Amino acid sequence: GAVVSQHPSWVICKSGTSVKIECRSLDFQATTMFWYRQFPKQSLMLMATSNEGSKATYEQGVEKDKFLINHASLTLSTLTVTSAHPEDSSFYICSARRGAGDVNEQFFGPGTRLTVL
Amino acid sequence: GQNIDQPTEMTATEGAIVQINCTYQTSGFNGLFWYQQHAGEAPTFLSYNVLDGLEEKGRFSSFLSRSKGYSYLLLKELQMKDSASYLCAPMDSNYQLIWGAGTKLIIKP
Image (cartoon, rainbow over all chains, first blue to last red; front, side, top):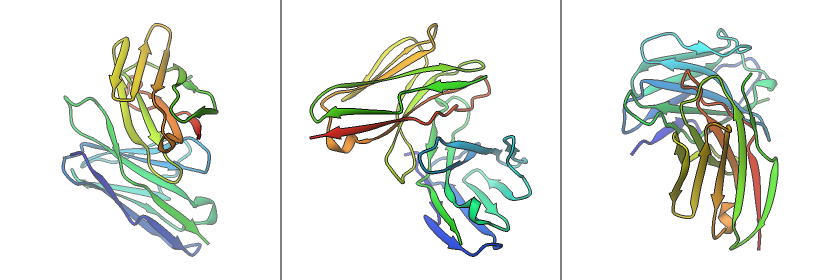
């Protein structure tokens, strides 16, 4: 159990376009989902935390108008990179956490590799 | 501030044992996770410690000392597939994981 999927696995887009990444918890309800970004040979960087039905909490330095997060249901969160630029090229990973009473473990999706030309 | 300190890279021989150390400083503490991350892939869960002591799970064991802000991951009977980065991630008072750059483990035959 506790499987998280992401779609797409990889995407190549032109500069200026928007890209939507989906994160789904397949066999559990995720009260909280996290979005991370990871550049090569660097640590995971938390971008934002989203709770179902409420606005996402963004980390300092992350533009909320550029990285739109929607957590519309207990099994789905989406990240939209608006007007993408080459510097947004990165590995985007989501994770999901079950509700209270769990060990607080985060289950990670397989990641989405974004390349902006 | 919050920070994680792990060796950047370690090398070990197939069949041997390796210990990856981690020291941390966090605002509050709600346990510590170890994750494995192969190149180009997302992290996968290895272990979770919230109380002091050793947790053993097959070839992998994890130790925690809360008073020292210290943890280690012990890998036994190393296999080539264990070549990966190992991430020590304590959880702070807000239940957020704090990530370092991890330790890249290279296994040689």
